[in-house]
Image 1: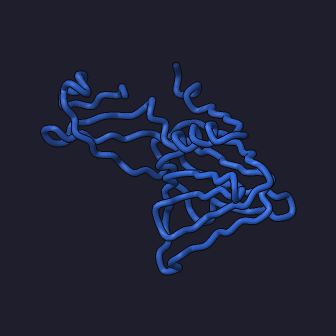
Image 2 (image 1 turned 180 degrees about the horizontal axis):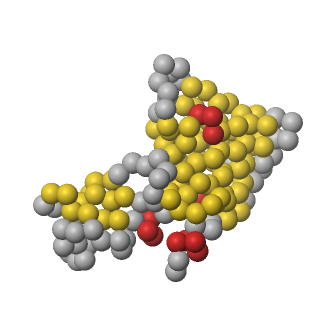
Length: 169
């Protein structure tokens, strides 16, 4: 499968199971405050994020038993429709920079979606129904903002690791 095929995600979300799948795909997606927007007239919320493409990750042993994993990222749009109200609030104006998406949670009793992020930002959407899409824009790139991951690297978990770059997940 080519890099081009791996970065053509299009997911339609209408239930909690699909939202969980989107959360898995968007976990650790990076974005700036300017990349999120609520259009009250059209009742649309959208966030342009950089999601990881783990299928193309590079693993490298950095010290015995510790590996660094770097993944390219692709620009992606998360869009919620039927949004009656959006609370988008920086909880600490002094801290700026990138935010990292950690979870999307839907409460069907309150008809509320919480977008949980690392950093001083609160995003809460009140919706008429759960209706969203996740769609990639463009191709994976190594030039996107990223955060390396460090994990234990034991031969039994990653038998291909020899201390050199390995482009397989």
